[in-house]
Length: 156
Image 1: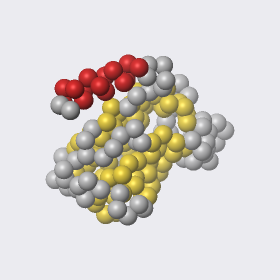
Image 2 (image 1 turned 90 degrees about the vertical axis):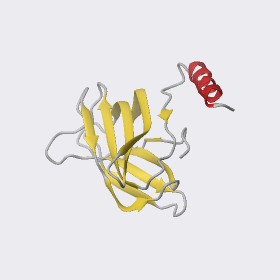
Image 3 (image 1 turned 60 degrees about the vertical axis):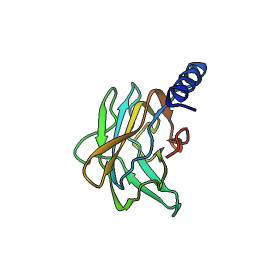
Image 4 (image 1 turned 120 degrees about the vertical axis):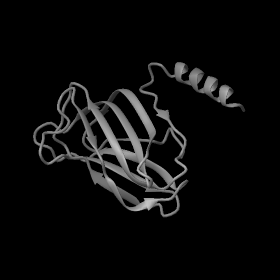
């Protein structure tokens, strides 16, 4: 199937899913090792003080590496706020070894733990310092304590 045909199929499928929840835009896997990520969230009208985590899984090891998304000097995830976090991996992920990632609401916040995430953008930071967008999604993604949003619609 040509690139044009694949794009057309993706467009038809996305139109068929209108009203079924947000449809992510996925990128192909980077051709260089990943040393970290840039995770940008946009909060809708429902803010949270919950503990929000970004977890990454590798294909070969299957191990998950998790990072709390928190700026200790500000109140994150406030209404209509854009937050960017830059977790660095303990060990780089070789090209082709990224299995996926997940955003988790682990609760633990003061008062309300639910969160209305309006948009999510995940970029890979590569070993040469360049960045590659891996995942983008917009449209209300409600995450109550214990809920998660993952990249399972994409394959890397």
